[in-house]
Image (cartoon, rainbow, N blue to C red; front, top):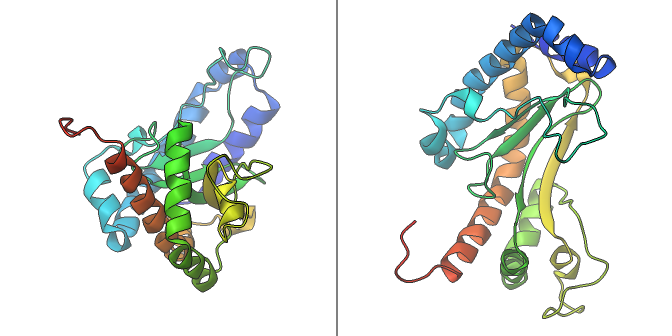
Length: 231
């Protein structure tokens, strides 16, 4: 089993991104979708062996719950093409939420990627994460140095109000989201088994930082949790 159907269909949809073509070739989409979901079903077991907190939350989910819709919400793309030709998934118990932090996969010819990250929907939560990074910066930077990962994301021009420009963590405090993303050459997308191990190489690099960001996110939750509120 490999990704030939997935990548070929994505390329064809990019060239024919309209509703008429999509419906006329819907059976091809279903085949590609089935292959993508088949890989996710396989990958869950490989991932779960090394990431137990994800395993607990996803093991009994259907893989289609992680996959994003291929049709765009035209309220936000009024003048754009109706479909996103990439096959995308967020392997988490809730792909719509900033928590829990899972793993993101996009397959598209010439622009595939895999990784994780932390996005916050409010400024208050962003500032909570910034404070946690500042207070635990030695642990944060040690993870970066030991794993060789690169943190990327949208960034402010200067540190936000309430933080010091002299803080050793200043460049990370400027960030509005914190992502670790690896781009995947087409030649590295082989059989399901090969690709599973390929992605696990990155999981092992990323996992210490995902755990750090998860602690930061949980710290933010607990900090803003009302005493009488039950999650």
